[in-house]
Length: 457
Ligand SMILES: *Cc1c(COP(=O)(O)O)cnc(C)c1O
Image (cartoon, rainbow, N blue to C red; front, side, top):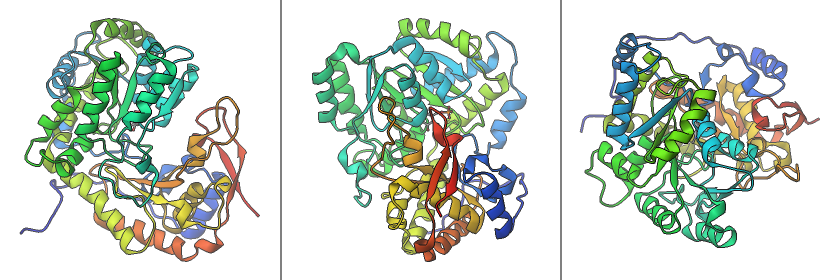
């Protein structure tokens, strides 16, 4: 069989700057040990996020040039709306400037103080928008998701028992929606099975609770359904995507992920009444309903990106690169979350640093040390991110403390991934002498972006 290679060739390149280890030690000290505070040019391989960092295709760049910048009713909007209806089945669509803006608009329309929003490990901005409205996000993810080495094929799945318990305890009036995140980002880029989507949908229907998707990585979720769930092996991704969305009443989307564009988002809806409510907030917060914070050209590129990301060859190229990185790390004995996620490899910092207590942020420590070693930037998904309890203000300690290495779409080669493996190996060799961190400043909400740290003595 012909060996595997990327399903694209490269038409333009962006040059990278290299720094020395001594320079990086100073740079990260000056950044007060927050990787978000670094200048990007001082990062050699940037795995901070796969959000808005993908490489667009020639077709998308061509679409940019054909963008229609009319304020109302642009061809770009009409094309995007038709693409979303064709791929995801939603007759109503509102563009927003990114995913969290879609959350802001939707939650302004349907969420109020005291409400309960069950879901599967809500993403941090989603949780932020829920808690900001003095509502409560309740996690219903299956327990297996928190067992690092348990190879469940669909670790994003919801435990129907947990969901039903919440309904019994709080009643349906307090539950304006269920949010299903596909794939589950905070849970490790883990997919939700079609069977589980159906189960959740059945419970929602029975109790009249609208089911919304947080669909940032819906294509990657469809790839996992195709490759892991019985009965889907021969189905085109577009067909699987249509089936997934046939169970949703609506969706929020960060187009910066599976839209393969640098900025953008949208809300997709079936219910005209919810659409009408959202319209007003969209106009107030985002822009007129036919652009909502996006340039026409960006909507055109997004329409093209959505068509590309729902092709099997694209997904196989993207997800197999993530898988190869994970497999190389396993080979080297580095503890990672299994199974390997769709968009990222998650290094298990609690196992990596048995000497560093969770109160000294082992995930953050690993991020700092990997940057110093190899100029690679990942991001902590652990105690810093999970933040304090909004009521007691006490630190919350998640079951997992992770360093996420998110791979941008179509950007780096496997040689870059080898540098990441090398860097982690070097930190692994000196893991018993790495120092914990202490927070010296934090914001009242979503502290991870701007927190400052110092190394423990
Ligand atoms: C990125 C992301 C969001 C927020 O989208 P932005 O475009 O970054 O505002 C919401 N949910 C999930 C699952 C995400 O990955």
